[in-house]
Each structure stands twice: as C-alpha cells, then as structure tokens.
Length: 512
Image 1 (cartoon, one colour):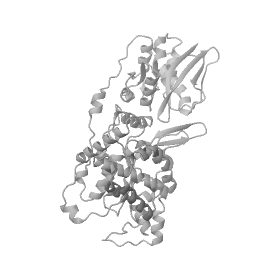
Image 2 (cartoon, helix red, strand yellow):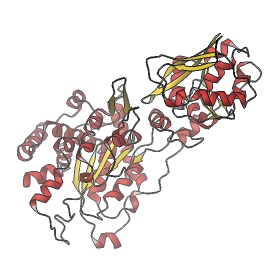
Image 3 (cartoon, one colour):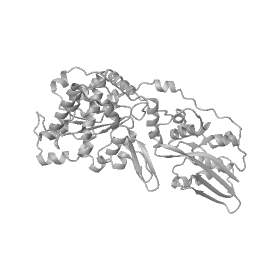
Image 4 (cartoon, helix red, strand yellow):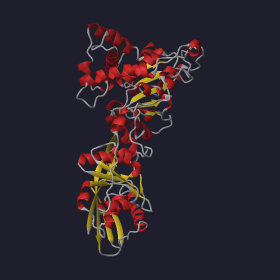
C-alpha cells in the first residue's frame, strides 16, 4: 500500500515541495528512508515509532520504505516526522484524499506524540501559498509566524492525534487568524534616542544621510568619541519596515529558529554587532549545510563592525560581494543557495593603533610603519564600497557637560522618511531598488546628473584626490541623497561638495 503526504524543506531562505511517499509491503519488518536523508531525517524512524506507540496507535510490522522526493536534493531537519507518521497509519485508518492533496504537513514529533516547533515555518507557508494549497498543518509554537503570510489556512496542532482525527474527518481544525492591520500599525520602540547624543553634529548629519539613502558608513575617531553610541542609534532614524521587508527578514530568523514562541514578524529593523573574532562563515554564512550568517540576520537593517581593522582580513574581504549585490551566494558541490543581505554597513575604527592620532589632548605614540600596517588591514576595494567615511573627533568637555540635548530620533526620522518617499517615487516599479545606495550603474547614470559647475567640481576633486571609478559613482549617489533631504530634484554643487567631504580616508591618503 502506498500513501503520499505533501511536505516541505528549506534551501537557503526559501522552501521547496517534498512528497513524502510511504510504502508498506509484506516481508520482514524493516524501516528504510531514502531520498538523500541526513542524520536528523534518518533518526525520525525512531521518533515516529515511539510517538505512534505512545499515542495508542499500532506501528505497522511491515517492510516500510519512505521516499522523500525529489530524491536528488539533500533533506535536513526534523519537519518530516509528522508526514511520515501520517503516511504510516494511513493503512489502517482511511484518510480523506481531498484533504491530503490540498494540505501541507510539517512538524517534529516527540516520543509522546507531541508536535514540536520546527525552523522555517514562514518560508513553508509562503511556498504553500504559491502552490495554491488551501491549508497547512504545523506545530502550534510556530503557527503565528506562518499565519502572517496569508492566503493559506494555517492549522496549529499540538499532538499527533489531532492531525489524524482531522484527516479522518472526526474533527475540524480552526485556522489561526492574524490581524495584519494591527501588526503593520505597530510603531517601533527603541530604548535609545539621538537626543541623548551631545555634540557630534557633523557625525549625526552623516548618519542622517546614510539612513536616507541606505549608504554604508565608516567612522574614524579616538576611543570614547561616541562611535558606538552613534551606530546604535542609526536604526532609530531608519523608516519602519514595510510588510514585504518584514517577511523577508522574518524568514531568515525563522529558518535559524531564532523567533521566540508566538512571534509573528520581526517588527523593528535588525541591528547586529558581531565580535571581531567572528569567522567568515559566521559573518556571511556557510557550513557543509549552508546557513545564513550575521550579514543576513542584519537584512533590511544595520550591521555594525566595531574595531574594523581587528577583524581578520579574509573575513572582511568576503563582505565585498554582499555589499555590491545585496545577496550572499554560497556554492557547494551538491547545491548553491542565496541568502538576502541588503544592509546598511556601519563600521568604526581608531585612526591609529593607539587611537590618538590627531587628538589635541593626547600624544600619538605610533610609528609611520605601525600606522601603515594598521590601516592596510582594511583593503582599498572594501573601502571603495563604503560610501561615507568621516572623522569623529573627541567630544569637548563643554559640549559633553553643558551642551544642549540633540535633536530627537523622531524628528530626524521624519526627514529620512520624506527622502525615502522621493526615492520610492523615483524607482517606482523597480522592487529591487529601495534606496539610492542600491541603484545599479544604469540608473545612477540616469538620475545622478550634474550641471556644468558640478562637473567642474568633481573633475578637480578627482584630479586632487584620485578617486576610483567606484568611489565616484558612490559620491554621486550620496549627493543625490543629500538633494533628496533638501527636497530638490537635481544635484547642486553644494550637495556634491558635502558628498565629497565624506571621503575622509581618500583625503588623508592624498595628504600623506
């Protein structure tokens, strides 16, 4: 006898259909799982047998063959426990065929028949919707995140007997209802605010520009100048996540199992700050079975790299492709997958190994050789991909103790939102571009147009500072963002001049 149950697995951040085919044949009792099943999948036979026995169901004493199709794609995880168990009992319990053909079934089984949480439920719900399935059975613990997708009835279950009773027509499962309007209406709450930052007006202006256009930013300054404090407040001035962005971000957290029980959406823009000892796989993702790294966990948010030169050079170099393309591509012999990585990179570093180069109150003890070695840890090609590079000097005592409170994050965010609205209108119909920083070359040539005065200014700057072609393009994108903040349709020389002075490292290198 052959039974087939619809299920799913995840590659990258997207789910794909898996047909769980269960064959019960006469012969010596045996249980074989085929279809490139990895360790957790092969162990499901032990969990399924115990779960059936402890749920008052007989385990069939037959020659059992379970095929996970397509058979040429590696299967990982424990989400196949529930569909395998359902296929095994179909021999003695007649199931409703129309429900089997229209319902996606996923879930891990405990030894007592309890249905436990699995990673990737949101991605599986998206796939079920795309397939046109009417419903999806999943563990109650992760039903909330799956229910956000909409277009498919998510049926939460807590025990195997509920699933069996549903497919035999004895009970009806109520679909989980999620109020999307309430979710989208929630405003992000932050524990920090730009009003707490005193002084550093130049740096705060640069962060506003970075937020308005989605530009990468590098801050260079002595210890205690407020670089980390500023970076942690950048998410507070970014516009709220759209529904599509929230779904994309939540899918990454879902496949890693990082969503808390009952969580629905990642409602605030992520802020990730990995330690400088992180590996390249930890930063951009990888492993024998590829998993997303910190870059993807920061998708649609901020990735903060403090003490940038302390990161191993080969770890930093793997950032070049994600910063350019907005995705991380991981290729293996048997598969290739992509993880999303549209981030605002914020990095911080000292101006020299001791940290006090150009500080008027401290003496720098670093030799020229030590300074060159320190700065060479960050390669030129990586710096070219950082749009804004600015110096953050130490805050004066008078500003720190007696200065007025700064402008609030809410006030800055309103200007950022207006600039983003102009960009949304500019890139209408192009869903891949959500800000000026993400413009491909063709669009930058179309929108970053200079008048004669602007062209003369840029030409003089290139002759003096030796900007690369990539740096020139990024300067123009930053200038367009500054124009957007000023609510102007064209780049003026003053916008271009401000963008050029945000290339601090290029200027200092020329001076040396």
